[in-house]
Image (tube, rainbow, N blue to C red; front, side, top):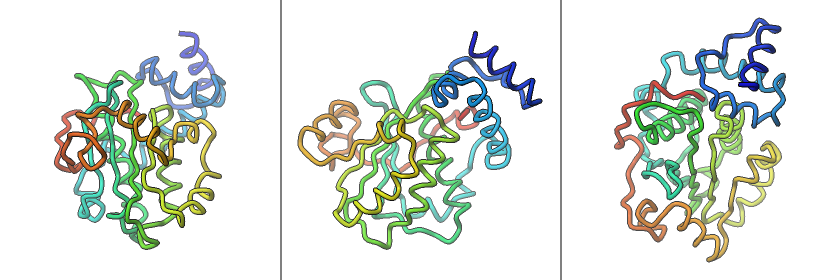
Length: 242
């Protein structure tokens, strides 16, 4: 309860929006993200609430708001890992940046929200995490917009604190190394520590051990079939907190 008291005291001083409707596990994620500093954590929480009210006023992003992003069927949702984390897979070669940056941002929120909601057992607890797999096989410069990559990771950092358990990057081509170096400058140390660029057989085995053979798709050495994000039914989308 001490972290809730710290949150409440700081928010009262700043006349900020209340945090009382959120559970301790949700608030703890914000505290961890800001090194247990109540002042910084409360500020981050308030910024999230204001962003959420603007970006996700209905509680979730519907498929009708992101038709162009869903058309290419580039994101896939694959059950729970051995540790109980939902697995989100993204095929970058099927992604072509659009001029509509707002739709892309909504697509990121939709992906993260639906992935997290897929792990709920009745209702959100507050400390759920996800595993991301970013497949760069067959990408060209046409598939790359560094701003969008930065946006995706910054959304995770700012609005989904402590939601990322691990992110595996597969098949990184040589020309993308420079792009990744630039992107990395915008990522927090805690985020970078959760990213694994798979380059050898041992790292592939770690990927298999963490996700599990039954959940990992066949083309990555597992037994599962690819299931597009829009083909997965998730009943709890409106229940997703950050």
